[in-house]
Amino acid sequence: MAQDIFSSRSATEAIDQLLGQKSVSPGQTGALGDDPLSAIFEVAQERGIKPEHLLGLAKLETRAGEKTVRGDGEDTRNLFNIKDFSGNGGIRARDKLEGSNDAYRRYGSYRESAEDLVSLLERK
Image 1: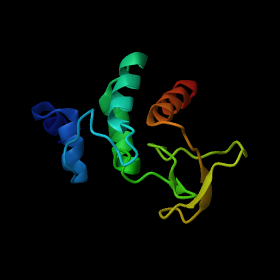
Image 2: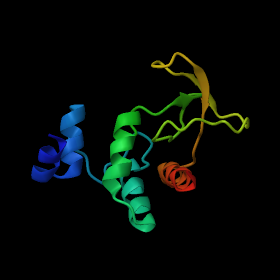
Image 3: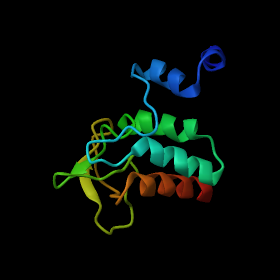
Image 4: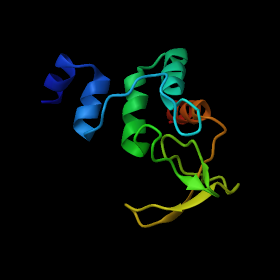
């Protein structure tokens, strides 16, 4: 059934349909003027991967940057809810699904978040 969804629409539209969200495109900026979608598309192109893969994960984790972990009133720009196990701080937040209180990584830009995810995946 998933094959039918992807054959008749772009992957982004299919992900939007599955998640019940409106389609978004690169160039739309978030609340801080940073552009999460352009960051995803640029990193994917530079690293030779399909942007739909990163976009799908970002939409599942943070609604493509709309619901990132916030700490001290600031956006962490963590598009993928990547946890921080380094012990260097991070932003503590309660995981509503798991009920745990964990540290999440904070990034200077959405691009850094996308690059970090790809680097993590390449190491695994």
